[in-house]
Length: 638
Image (tube, rainbow, N blue to C red; front, side, top):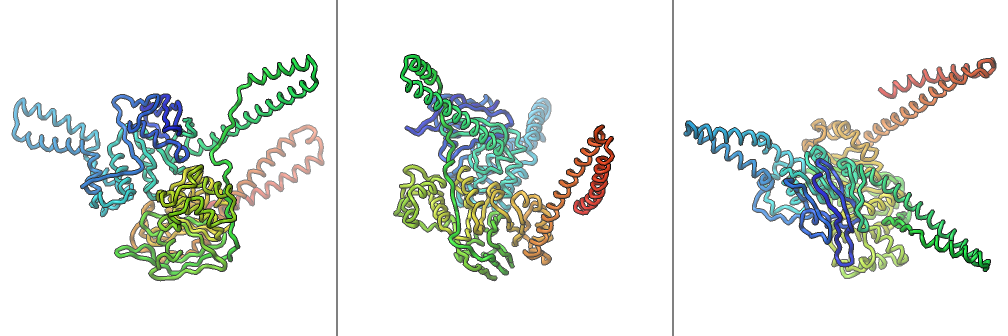
């Protein structure tokens, strides 16, 4: 065990964060701390690192062990460049290297006992330097910075000129390189692109220390953690397994608790009905029996009704009118900024009902594409056209159409006067505004909170073509699940940019990957994209593409059109479906053939010549069909 919390409690006035919470983290264990926004995850982290005192209980870090903490927000002030700042994580190794070099100079001028003593020190230091991987620390720094999405040309940028997200990435890199015995990471993937998140997953899986993570990235948690700690309504509960295991176990536990509660309620009602009936007889014996039943009823310990957050909230999105089948056509679209070509000669189409995710590295032009389609900025060349009756609903985190003087509730009710108060509150609750929160002024909200209000308004707009830029940012897991269900039921068309792989996997029917200045089309969800990524990117995004790397070179002239990509992938999916059907039919026939053999061994069957002939004919037909199926399976498999 490396870290333990025993009976910790914390409250801010009437707001109870945790009551008598306990958990432990073992050496090398990878665990997650999950719960709704505001449940107290960051507060628990701050108690662990000593930034906040616990009201009760204790936090124990094993003696001699080190702890590293990445907070969500970084107020880093530094006169250093990115590389210099991260290099500070290796200060001990650099000091050791300097000492080794100094001794090397000294050795030339020493002799006798002094030389022997200095050589011993030198050998001890070089052994320690090698043990700490000192000879490779510079390449290690470079690898971590590149893994977190910094190019070598970024290394010389002053830290003080960086955005908050970039500073967080610098802090994360610095922390990873210090290699503490346990890492506490609060939303480490917030400012990373898909490639950087995948790199961080691999790094943490191979990390020799323990890790405790707060994250709303369910795909990331599925890949990395083997234990989930849940904080909800002041209770801390531990579950073994990754996020999906936790979600399934929690659902089963909730179902069992609800069943137990309903059974007890039924038992209580039965007792009450019997008591009422006995008393209605109004006889001495019946009254005594009623009193005896009442005593039995009093001894029953009531089971608290299980409450699951957001269970009553269901978003329903439905377009006000149906668009034509052709929703959007993009032809020869290009966009550049000084010194940077984002994409060139892009062509694709979107049909009614498609749910399309646009993915790619940071800075490749995903948000720029959405802005062009919404006429916020112009394209350099090319054109696009909307289909018949297409009405766009646009969510852009940078451009919220909100009234600063209004309350959240009024912002919704004034635009949608036909909605009942209950419907408005349900919609706002889905986006984390509950109770008196709905009466906060828009002008007093944070940028993330304003984004959530804008998203709530958009979900009510009844547009038939939703264009969303990072819709799950600032949402907790429960709200993401509500939004996912609403979008999956949505009969309109959806185009969005997202880094949330779990969200993409749940909602996308098609993916456009912006790589090497062009879009590679995948007809499927994120899992399908991962399966086909290297193969299709090499074909469609240029011959200079290396698997796993988005090369900045010129796209190949031989890249196929979007329509050709779509046709090839449709054929591949058809082949896979037919292969599965063939395998299922082979299994079915082989099982039937074995069953016939068993049947023919029965005395009442093998003594019946008519029945034997029927079964023999069926076996012959099965053999003939199987022969054909085996040949077809080989064709499909190759």
